[in-house]
Image (cartoon, rainbow, N blue to C red):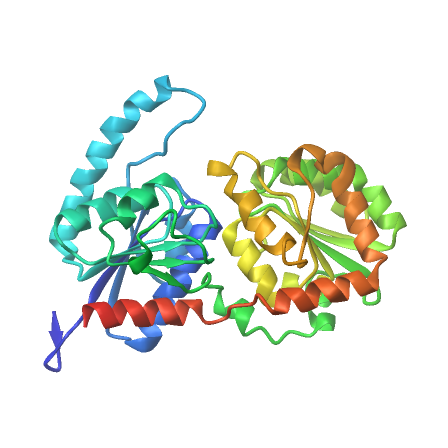
Length: 369
């Protein structure tokens, strides 16, 4: 496609499944459009996953594949996976024939493998963004033929060819990076009081059972310690937690926080999973954090993500198995220790990366221009 004698670049962004994949993908898309507004971007996701809702809300077109991931608990359930994978490759072939991409970017999630594998078979430039400190097997396979691999952290040579790696950090949403929200306005947004220590609880975009149960069990202790709570529960725990918000005005509860920039601005302390994007956002907003990593993530990568900060004295960690007994106690102890909170914030500031999306977009455009 041409306009004013100039060839318009067409780029596919593949991936999704969780906010940790979707939000950096959108940040990269926005950075590409900011550098060249004529670029055409098409997202490819997995039918039934949250990208099919979140990407159109952000103003981009998305096509869904009939694809699922490997079921680690049941080999029998994986029999249909081969058929779904073959079907997804046929779907990808049709998408490529119609859209004719100049480059393909994979951010992780079910759709990344078939889309990038197909692109590589057609000698179309492919780019991977690996947000975690421990690369997934699919990305490791794709990395061998990728044009470039962008990583959120250093020391990733054990997963990818060293000459293809560019350490960019993880793309954080501009509304968080550029947020200029006063704590007063943020607290008003959640109908909470000024002058109280505010805990933000986020178990990731889909919620976290152990964190939710720990907070529910420890809610009286949190209130007695003078804390108020902003709590993203995820869909499955929303009803169970709702009574707390009805009974206690110092608790705000919802299954999903649309405007995380307000939540971060209101928070003094965060309790969270340790997905790569949550870790990146915590570094940007510099809020003291108690991580409760999800232990069943592939290769236990959330623990690896969290330890990147713990080892730099920038975060605290509570094991998932100990969350119910220790998570709230750790938060209350941190709330009472202002000097420790200040130390953690200062160390987080040193790890903050705010322009990863622009670096990734610039490198992609440089490679296909």
